[in-house]
Length: 324
Image (cartoon, rainbow, N blue to C red):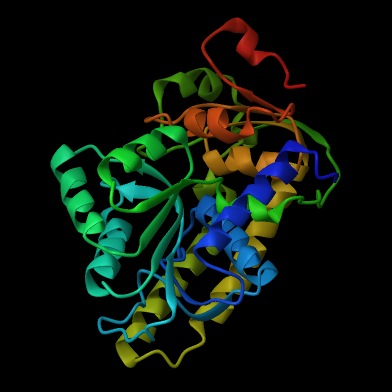
């Protein structure tokens, strides 16, 4: 694809990360996903591709389930935290891990990859701001303008930069199967579902309506659960099992399944941010539906609006026209 394509331009914007994680850096990668959210797995794949493409040396990798209670990190290594949409008080496990890293490593450079920020509690937001602002070398990338304004206001002693999602490093993705079906409805079924999605829930045929938890078969989901058990066991016995190596191979299978699913449809209608991003990476027509706190619309308005294959849904008749 030519570099003038809107998706190529977004991929190029990720190079801003090299200002704080230079090429050739030694890093540890913290909080990579070990669960059945394909969006986070897509971010992980993009992040690892970014490291490889820029000769960034990953000296250790830890998920939230196997990071040691006592961790020694050489002073010149950079701690890089996984990006995504869990910065705030909706997903406490991952937020608590980030806070622990900031608290425990005041003398290391800490870099948080592109995140969307959302707090329900002002008190919790202020506590996080006080902790992060006290760190002398903390750099945070955010995925949308609302998160950027919040971070510039609250995290005013940190280095805040607007940056696209790490999955864009995967551009371009090639379809893996023939397009034989019409419309895929890839719709949320969790706490971020919004009322505006109901129109699409009503029109979707059950056989063409999926989410991450239904894309993967019960056996595949069971496999994920077994991996989680092995991760916890690995932490308990001190880490000799090659769990991460096998998990990464398993996630290759999960991502290939998602790419094949999307490739088989002419169009996608989705309330998943990474349903939207995956459709962008495959350069296919799609409609984006917002989530409960505006993450998807914020992302679209900040980054992907120039893509002629994407259309943001609003509750007006013209919003349901086919994307160009």
